[in-house]
Structure formats: structure tokens, C-alpha cells
Image 1 (cartoon, rainbow, N blue to C red):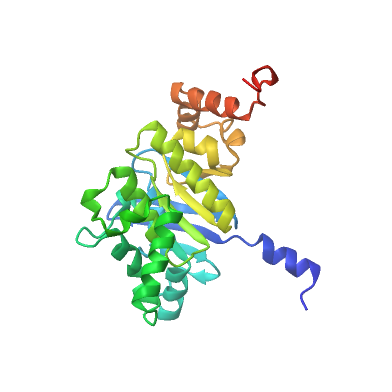
Image 2 (image 1 turned 135 degrees about the horizontal axis):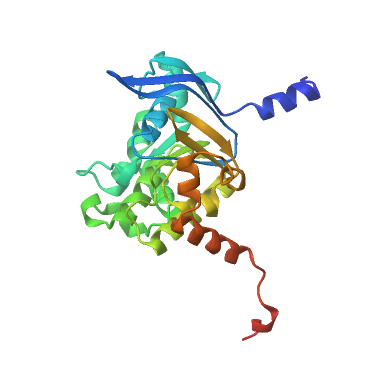
Length: 279
């Protein structure tokens, strides 16, 4: 039986652990000696300027790119391993929403959602796969009739939700979202943020979220990791990140858009005015 110290230690162990990561493309160095821990059950927002390698970092964590140097552990497994058992462990327990959904254009939404089910659960009957796909589509906030539509028949926001449904197909504990609100209008972006937070709380997900959307950072992220100068400068709650002394951080978190996002968040936290109750 584990001791109290062992139990606490296991609980505190990060679900993603990156140490000394380096990624190069020829002479271009994208990451150098990068460290990052992601805690189980949190929504972590990853931000950085253009060319800082946010998506490259995500692909390295997923094992889609083998880094030049460094260690990456995901869900207790070496992400650099090419052993079938290790790859299967990570693939079955992670879901990924790539930009714009990255759906197969020739497949319906339902068929797209069933792709990971067919790959990892080939013994399931067609009817059960269909029912599971329908469940995930509804979970992602889409109507049932979206199941039989092609991606080209959907709006940009609906394609993202369809991609999210596919990412949730295997009930993964770890979800990766790459710029999920990019290209959405403010109302659609806010609705997607709310959906992400609802799913994270209801399903106990850990969410690795790449974004440039300040509203998203303030609304749903527990911590923010800032990529700059080829590494993660700071990983902390947004209130601490705002105070970090670095030119890009100060410009990003204290510009006009940041001030607007801060005001929106402050308003959302204000208690209702009792004088307006009952009106």
C-alpha cells in the first residue's frame, strides 16, 4: 500500500514534463534548452510571438516531431519513443484539435469522428461507432444533423467543433488545442472558450492550449506559458505573467487589447447589482 508521501508525490507529478528541449531546422534554432511542466487537470495557455515555435513544441510533445535534444515525458511515457506500445499509449490518451479542424474533406463529420475509433477499436460494431460519434458531436455543441454533412458544408466555427468532436472520440484525459478561436468572431470565440471550460470541468481534462487570443487567456486558463528567446520564459497564473519583466511580455499584456480583455474579465467577476434583480 503506498505511503502518504508516495501518493502526494504521484499526484504532483506533471502530466507533461519537458527538459532541455532543442529543435532546429537547418541553421535555424527554434528551441534551445526549453523546460516546461503541465499539471494534471489544468488549462495551460501557450503564447508567444510569430516564429517562437508554439506548434513545433506541441508536435514534439505529441511525438510527431523528434527533437534534436532533450527529454519529453507524456502520461508517464517517453514521447520520443518509437516503440509501438508507447506510441499507442500516447495516441489513445491524447486528443488534438489542429487549426481549422484539419478534417478529411471527403468524409462526413460522423465518418471523421469515427476514424480514431476504427483505428484503435476495430472490434466495435458499425452501429456502436455511429452512436459514439453522435455522442461526441453533441458533446462538441453541434446538432445531430451535422453528423452527415461534409466539412465544406460547415461554417468555420462548426468545423472547429467537428474537429473537437474527433479529438474527444477516444475519451482522452489530455487535450491539445491549436489556436481554437482563430478566425472566429468575438461571440463565436467566447462560446468556444465556454465550451472548452465546461468540457474540462465535466470530463476532468488537462488542456494544452496554443492561442494568441487574450480573452481566452483571461477567461479560462489556469496558467500561461510564454515562449520567447527560444525557451519558456515563465509559466504562471496570468496575474504573475503580467508583471514579468520582458519587452514582449510587457507589450503583449499591457497593450490596448490586453486592457480590454482585463476589463471584460473584471466585469464578469463582479457580483450582480441587487437593484436590478427582479427587473
